[in-house]
Length: 556
Image (tube, rainbow, N blue to C red; front, side):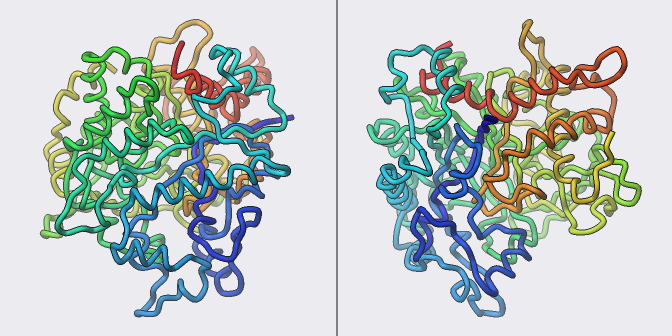
């Protein structure tokens, strides 16, 4: 039986926010709602519900919880003052209005959602779901070491083991949403309370998410929503305007996460702004000097894409321009489209990445691999680089502008100033696919690119390689537009076959010089055994080993 690991998906987020659906059912829109869901690329219907998982090869994964941000609740599918959303979306509008009208806190909403998950445990554990939430306190692995735990997870054919993560530091804010008079002063205390719960255990937390949380700023966030997404949801808070780098409150959260003796929580760098991410790598290094225990805790980026260059080269070559400062609080970073490879489709053959800085630079790929962390490649077509429904291989000079906070844009991209102390960190570190198959090629391009960067940037011990730190992080039910052929989690079973076909093509067509990412026989053909081994790592075993290490609290 072929099994799958997913580093990032949402199991009951849509059920928690919806009415008239049990957790045994899929969330499905009807009528005009179904039409709009198709227009927007399928973000509203279920993509990783328990029912879909019951028909999927998923056996181990990371399930993310998050409170709905005010920016999403602010204006949902509203056109010319008419709230179309209320007519077609089966949402629990009381919950939405409570968030929109500042009648709750993010922390209370997060706890309410966590309780919803805990209440659902008994139902989810039964047939046909066999979903079991697990953590470091569970009895089933108490007598096992890390390797034995890993082997048990590999061998499991019935149960599906999921661990929880926290998506966004906003979930720790204990003051009323959008409060104008109060700020969440000690978010690390809410995190400590979560770490010490007996009924839940968390592997990681994203410091930031997709919007400005004015009552609790922990660091800068990257713009994640493109123009089409902002038709469905609109708020000024989606535009980064203030703060850059880690705030003092952000540092307190990081210290609490990493230094808890019994239950440390990893930092997931997805959604941090690029400036904040590099600030974090430097701060983590400093923290490790003070507390060597930090060195054993990996860095993760669970659902990401790549910019396909280093930050050093990006700042040096300047394939971008900054809009004029017009006192909006943010600047537009206008980046040239970056061709990363090609297919041999004669009419639509060029492949491009998404050059927004929400994606990882080469230095970060190396830093995460050096920490023995994991990089989950997102299945969101926007993150991977797809931009147009037709003729996507023909692009204008520039990609869609990215909005960045004014201080960060000016400091990093106008003056080339890196976060404090980061300078030292820099020095340290066959078959022609059709147009419909472009998305799987983009996924494969990301995988082989990461391996090439890893080979060039790190010394590897015998028996190890960059392939050991890559996996899939779908972000299903995170309001994504899934790549072609993979509309929901139940379809991941066919990915191994596609990777066998397209990884060699991606290794051949990837732009640029450098060693290949796969092994080849003397006759020039791909070593099929090696190819199957690395596919198995990406699809399952890398993630399982990460979870086994987590369950044994990162012991070697």
